[in-house]
Amino acid sequence: MSKPREADLYAPVKAYLQRQGYDVKGEVGAADVVGRRGADVVIVELKLGFSLSLFHQGVERLAICDDVYVAVPAGGRTKALRSNVKLARRLGLGVLTVRLRDGFVEALADPGPYAARKIARKKKALLRAFDRMEGDPNAGGATRHGIVTGYRQDALKCARFLAVHGPSKGATVANWTEVPTATRLMANDHYGWFERVERGVYRLTEAGAKGLTDWGDV
Image (cartoon, rainbow, N blue to C red; front, side, top):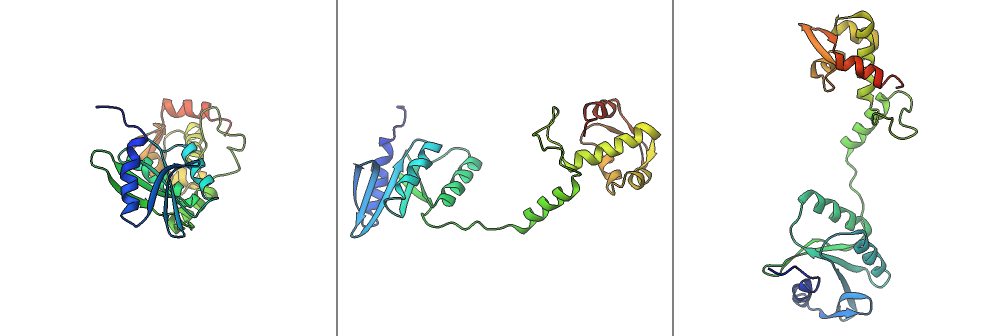
């Protein structure tokens, strides 16, 4: 089977636009595909995959007309495709995918102004993370061991308490460290720092002691 070429996208895209009443021509000026329907003009840029260059070309074509699409072969990773379609929408570009085996063209997005839909729960989660974090530990970029999160800071508080006082009840750790979720945090033990001695009582592991050394500057 021969390797796909950008030219393989042209005939399906042309047929797709013709069904909508456009007169279509390829390689007009700097544009890959141009369709004209009276005063209406549509431009399509063809590529074998999404790239920064493709988005640059699409944005440049918006100086000519409002209806600009980028067209790529169908398939690929769904998550990456969704992200690229979202980016195209933010830029005001439409997206066409072409199924090369039969020429089926699907419009995943149409050109036009984009208004991002605000998701309240994501904003709340961001603000919770902001309020939970003490100081600005990532001001100079990631530390030598990685990004510092509010969760990491809470785990360090619990680990420091156990390093000094030895095995302790979760309620005691929560009270002294002012980490309300201390018991659950130590029970979940995402970092391997804590070990349950008996019901509700935890101690620091060797990994936890090493974590205190590694993250001592936080």
